Length: 179
Length: 179
Image (cartoon, rainbow over all chains, first blue to last red):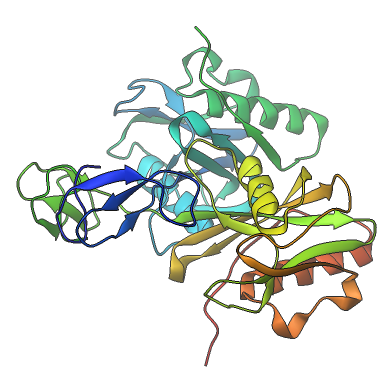
């Protein structure tokens, strides 16, 4: 951030009175511009014993597989965001059935909020951000070509839960891959 | 938003190519400025059969009671944010023990992520944003002077869970109070 989004004057990084972290503060109008983590809302869409995955048509991780998920928009709930992303990326209608996990990615200032969703019917297709969309049994999940560590971790727990016959709500912090 | 935070030129609201929602777009450098919901991370701090509440020293809802909670910062996990807010507002150290609820407030573009936390010791005090901090048994919770509907709803469910002898992870959408 270089300029104040309110008045257009330059901003400087400083700790406002009563605060304890540096913020972008406008030298002209004194507006304080906070920066906050963003929510990625997503869904594990289920049909019978399978789950629906999308192969990404966009960067990052073009060509790799993931669950439908994306940045939550203002004015919607987390459940609405997860269902909207599923419709956009997998052309599939889901009923959000339960919270599955909340995962923090502090190194990229994101929080993933993932739900389980029931496909209303086995109709789906590639949205504009997907190359292809397909149903996978747990043993068919393409572990080596998943797009993101957080999705790998979530699906690993999901398969374990399903094997154990009961779903938990999961939380955790996902750190960047170590070199 | 009036000006581009990258280059300082005026922004206009328009739907970018490949998008389906209006965004603030810079007329000069073409930067797209997304706006996203913010996370309020908080904690229900527990000590024996009591929970810790704070009476707010700041607006909104000055003088009313709430759990320690506040806007999540970049670079931290949701659990770290909840523990930090508890330390700041209630001068209390907690161990975050479990996720308690995820509540969307679409009308104010906020998502509350609330945890249960175990007080490490019964030491607490009013931080700079609190007038007073106190432990309450469930039957002592000041329902009529709670600051926020989302906290009322979360604590109502919390007391019910405790009465029933088992804690759920809760989700829901909190709408503005009807007149």
